[in-house]
Length: 239
Ligand SMILES: NC(=O)c1ccc[n+]([C@@H]2O[C@H](COP(=O)([O-])OP(=O)(O)OC[C@H]3O[C@@H](n4cnc5c(N)ncnc54)[C@H](OP(=O)(O)O)[C@@H]3O)[C@@H](O)[C@H]2O)c1
Image (tube, rainbow, N blue to C red; front, side, top):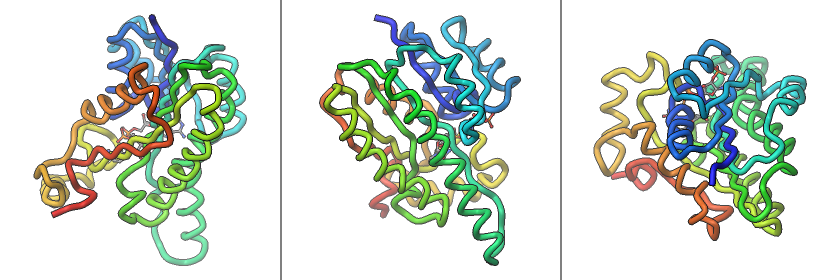
C-alpha cells in the first residue's frame, strides 16, 4: 500500500536519498526545505510521487502555514533537516548565538513539526525517524549537544506514541559524503582523517543512511521504538 511520507531537508544530501527510496517504493513523498529552486529540482528529478514544500522549520509562523499544505494522514515522518551554526568566537554574545543557532537548526526544526503533526500520524502503523549524529555521543560542542537532546526527546516521544502503535527512532550517522553539510571543509585531507577513525576505513554514503531510515520506517520494524541506530562504519568505538 502506498504511504504518505514527509522528508524534511529532502532537497539535498541524505534527505534526497531518503526521498528517493520512498518514491521508488511508490509512496507519496513531500520534501520540505527553505530553498524553492533546490526543492523543485529535486522533485523534478525524483518524479511525480514527490511534492516540494517550502518552509523554514525553525520558524513557527512558517510551520503553522505549512500545516495547511501537508497531508491530513502521515504514515512516515523523517526529521532529517539540520545544519551547523557557524558563528565563531568565545565571548558570551558569540556563544549565545552559536548555541541558540545550533538548537534552532537541529532541535526546533524537529520538535516544531513533529509536535504539530503528531495527531496526523497513522495509528497502528505510523513511523517517526529522526536524524541525529555521531556528534551527539562524541562531542562537537553546541552542535553535538543539540543532536544529543534529540535522543532524550525521542525517548519521550516514543513513550507518548507507543500506546497508539506508532514508533519513533533515531538514526545517528557518522561522516557522510555527497551532502552540503560540510561545504568545502570536507576536503581530501579531512576525508582521510575521518575515514581513519572508522573500523571500515572509509566515510559513509547518503544511500547507506537512507537504507537505515527506510528500514526503521518499514512495517517490519514495528517492534523497534525509542532506539538509536548508529550508522558510522564503526567510528563510535573507533580503533
Ligand atoms: N553529512 C554528514 O556527515 C552528517 C553526519 C551526521 C549527521 N548529519 C545530519 O544529517 C542531516 C542531513 O544533512 P546532510 O548531510 O544531508 O546535509 P545537507 O545536504 O545540508 O542537508 C540538509 C537539508 O536540510 C534542509 N534544511 C536545513 N535547515 C532547514 C530549515 N530550517 N528548514 C527547512 N529545511 C532545512 C536544507 O535545505 P535548505 O537549506 O534549502 O533549507 C538541506 O536540504 C542533518 O540533520 C545533519 O545534521 C549529517
